[in-house]
Amino acid sequence: MNSERISPGTGVLLDELYFAPYEASGWHNFLKRMVRQSDSRSARLLVMNKQANRVFSGVQINTDAKAHQAYVDHYVNLCPWRPGLAHLPPGRIYSSYLDGICDQKTFYRSEFFNDWAKELDIHHGASGTVWQFEGQTVQMFFQRTGGQGHFRRHETEAFNALVPHIRRTLRLEAILHQQKLKQDCLEASGCFNAFLLLDANQRVVHVSEPAWRYLRANPQLHLAGQRLRLADGQAEQKLRHLLGASFVAGASRAPVTGGVIGLPREHQSPLLLQVLPLHPDADRGLLPLPAHSAIFLLDGDEQLGFDEGKLAEMLDLTLAEARIAALIAAGNSATEIAGIRRVSLHTVRSQIKSIFLKTEVSTQAQLTRLVTALPGVRHRRRALRTPFLSQTS
Image (cartoon, rainbow, N blue to C red; front, top):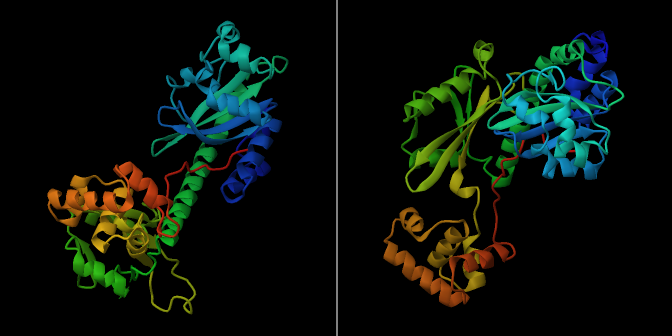
């Protein structure tokens, strides 16, 4: 492979890379071009857990679906190239032949080669940990056939000239994915109505009525001189950092993508504050107030809930019993329910007994199955944590 062909100055390749987060097949197209320009047989980009022994998601080129699934399910941890990566600095691509990851004789004796790679004519590799993000590890692999030969030094250096660009693009992918999850969470929970708008001086210029209710009910946050203040020092410091990053003055030193702050509450899920920058040139017709950032208030207890009135009606329970049934279905123990409801454990156990009699179940697990199976009683859905690179090919 000619290092000039995939140098950082290669416009088409970089275009493919930086378009990747915005297009459904973007990472697939980038890897496809990389395989072609590096004279590789195949390639894969894997999003894994922190220990890099479990695959969450990924993109692969020139391996059929069955072989790829076998690799993910079983052979990924048998690949003799991968353990060597744990002992090499991340942020680089290494040649399996030249960098001491695994000598060729050991590779040919391995179960990985004889049961998986041999049939695919995979004999040589170049691989590396290109990025780590919030407990997730991203590794990149390129493979060659026996006839193509191993990856030489100038070829791995050509790969490594691209690694900084790959890292930046993966970071962009992660940011876009986080924002999508936050947006999905807001839409699913119906909490758009509890928000504050702030101007460029971080002064609160608008508070919605639902947000006022949170302010009155939670001593952890209050307004002082048109500024939102948090009682917890660390949370206050993070709020100032995120708000500062929303404006031009702080943009050079901090990300401008917003973030989430959790405020602990006794016997309740945390109250979440989501800071979202608003473009200062937003359409004044849509946003008549001079707002530069928004703070949405999200009640953790409302992220997964049940229509307690409908639950009471369908199971012939009292409203108090329906609340207990909903809390059980949400995974709370009797002791936790007593704390949340601020009643004695004896009272909770008595109510659970009454619920069991009325619903003809004998365990909390049976009650949970019954409640969650009822049509129309679930009205909110918790957003699941998913890998940021969600495309699979």
